[in-house]
Length: 163
Image (cartoon, rainbow, N blue to C red; front, top):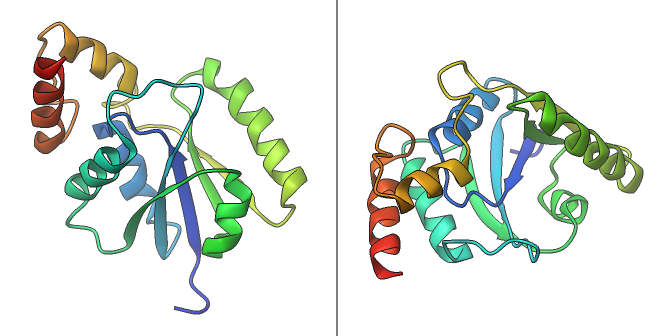
């Protein structure tokens, strides 16, 4: 679609949670297509490889044809330009997220003035979910089935047993 409104929701998604899924589905109310951009972040030690994260996101979102999942490295603004995206979707769970996200939005605007950042807050029932908490609960044998897609819960169990 040549004049479609394309947004990017970027993150490490290690793993994708129900909170991420909620934001992705809700963002489709405002855009025609969403690209979930799985970032290679050299400052983090991910539990899942980039390929595993891409596949888990695809499994969790298999019923939504307007969402595309891709990995990327480098600057998000360059990836957005390549994808012809006009919006960046960012989630804000708590006030503590705001300072970092605000700084990133300003830097992205400096690097690409026509690329807009839209902040979304999670739904009330997912606001407490973070990938790091999900990993922690799973590491200690806690039940994560209501926090992540069943395929992700299965992958977490397998990954943690293998460690």
